[in-house]
Length: 458
Image (cartoon, rainbow, N blue to C red; front, side):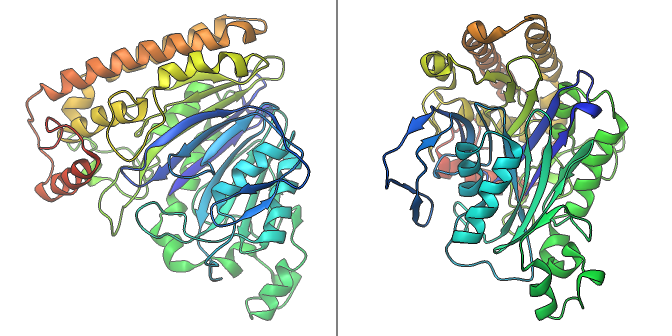
C-alpha cells in the first residue's frame, strides 16, 4: 500500500511544485537511496528489467531513486530534469499477467527516458502497450497488481491509471493524490485506444456515454481491503485545506499522519498495533490483514528558479524518521561519494548498523515496544533538527548547487548521530504500556530473520 500526492505552483506557498510519497512494502524490505549518472548506450543495447530485457535507448538521464534493495526498479524517484514519479498498486477485475514490466520497472524507465512530465507519461504508456505489465511485485510474498502513477515536473502533473495494457490519464489542476484504487471516472484527457471498447466487450458498460473507468475496471474486494477510499480523500483534503500555501513541512506532516478517519482520542494515544490500512504512515500489523509498513518517504521541492531539493527519510516509519536533503545538479556525479558515505553501504536483507536504513530500523522497532512513551522521548528533538535543515536550506539563497553535496553530507551526519543516540535512549527506557503479546511475537519473528540485535528482540 502507498500514498502519493502533488501540489502544483498555484497551490503552494512559493510557486513551486511539491510532490510526496510514502512507499509501503514488507517489514524487512530495506529501501536504498541510489544515484545513477547520465549514460550513453551503444546501438542495439538492452536493459534487463525484472522479468525480461527490453531495448535500451541511446542516452539515459541521471536519476535519484528510492528502491527496494533487491530490484532494479524503484518505488519513487526523480531525474536531472526535475521529473518525479511515484507508483501505486491498484486492483482490477482483469487478471495480472504472470510476467511483464512491473510498476517499479516502468517508473525507473520513465525517469531515465523523459525530460518532462508529458514525456514521462508517453514513455510509460508506450512501454505498457508494447510490453505489458505484470509479474509479482512482492519481496517474500507473491503480490500481483496493476499500477497507477503520479508524474510531475516543475509546472505540470498527470495522474496515470493502468489495468493490464489499458490506461487513462488525467491532467492535474491545483492538487491531487492517489492511493491504491482507481480514481479516474468518466473525465480523462488521454486514454489507450481500446479502453472503452474492452469494457463494452466485457459487459461493464454500453459505450462511452455510460463509461466510468474506476467503476468498470476496479476490483471491489482488494480495493476495499486496502482502505484507499479513506486514505486518498484524507491526503487530498489535507492539500486543499492549505491550497495556495502548501509547504514542504505540510507534505511531510501528511506523510506522517496516522488515522485517516480522525485523530485518536486523548485517553487512547495512537499505537501501531492498533493501526489500520487507513493510516498514511503505515505500520505492519500481520501478514494477512496489514502486511505492509512505510519503508521509505520522499518530498520533492521543485522550485522554478533554483535547484530542486529532494527530502528523503532513507528509513521506515516517517512518524519517527527524519527527512534529509538531496540534490541533483551538474556536480552530483563527482560529489555523490561524499553524500553516499552518509548513507553507508547499500542495504541488504540483514541488519547492518553501518547502513542508514537498518540503523533507523533499530530505532523504529525499539519504539514499537511502547510507542506513546518511547516516541515522545525524542520527537521534539527530531522536529527541531529537521526544522533546522529546512531553515538552513531555505536560507542558502541563489543557486546552491556548488555546496549541495556538502550540505546533504552534513545533514546526514547530524541525522545519523541523533538516530544512534535516540535508539540508545529508547532501548534503555522501561516499557510502561507494552503492546499485545501477539503483536510483539510477530515483530520478534521479523527481527530474528533480519538478525536484529537481541536488545531489540524482546
